[in-house]
Image 1 (tube, rainbow, N blue to C red):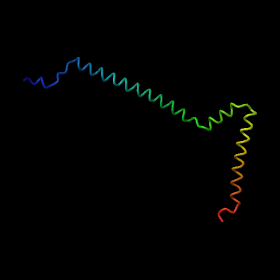
Image 2 (image 1 turned 90 degrees about the vertical axis):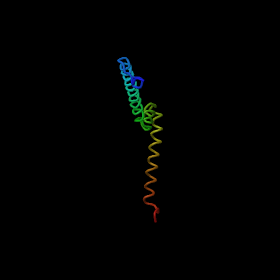
Image 3 (image 1 turned 180 degrees about the horizontal axis):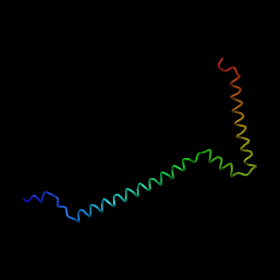
Image 4 (image 1 turned 30 degrees about the vertical axis):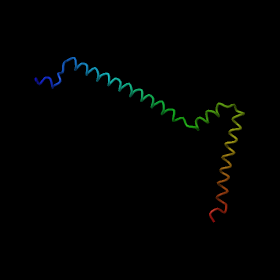
Length: 95
């Protein structure tokens, strides 16, 4: 039995075919990486949009009359929280 039966024979055609396969593989990897990068950048910019920013945009979209009611409610809630904190400081708590 000749030794060539056990050893693979590489021809120029086989080498070119392997080179083409590797090139296609690299192109696919680069395309997938580019798509992943674009998707990551899009999702990153969306996560920067906080609920506070969304609330402000909604309030800005309202007319002045509707906005006044909401602003008054927010200010009253803030005053109530400040009033509760002041009452706790001078009260009998902790004695």
